[in-house]
Image (cartoon, rainbow, N blue to C red; front, side, top):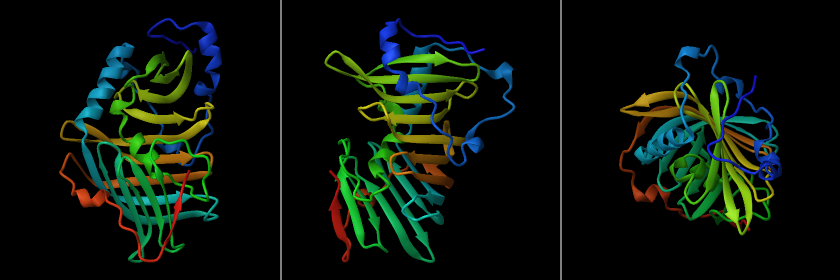
Length: 277
């Protein structure tokens, strides 16, 4: 039986108007891999919204940087099939991200965001897609991965700042729905799914202004480093472009100083720069 608990009263009309924010999204590749099985019911926690929120924010505050090697799978209509390669991931707050994929000693793609601007470089195609972070994209110009989205998904400590939220309690997980307020309207911003056994974020969704899904991420196979738990499996999907990026991380380290030049864009000698608006 489904049961729910809300952290504060919300008018019924408000809940009905946000039906899109709680929609069931279609399963993506490896979704089943990221779902826990055989959960020990005795370990399921009963916490308030404020306790869950505080724990998420605290965990996010403790993680300042992450670096790892990665097995990468890219699925997109642009490449007609799945593409696998190896690479590296570097992440640093606020929202700085770099993912480089390589195969046969050659760079296949270079994903970069410095928190203000982002770049998606495809050396073989001799093209760089670039744009401003946190801006509404009107066109995609055949760009199918957006680096600024990845940085935002990995930095959820600021997820609640300046926003309203409420929580649903389910038998083995919590849903936290987060809203932006514009004038007298509340617009869905994002949704978190949290494991009630380990308090780990297993899914994060960001919404567009029209309440459709902008980007969706699954996190799984958490490992403990020092006093932090970090996911070794990250799956990111952009429904609009039909693209999925899967990262299987290893050799992880956290909170180490990263060189600033890692997140500085250098224009390739031979590449067209396409600005995304």
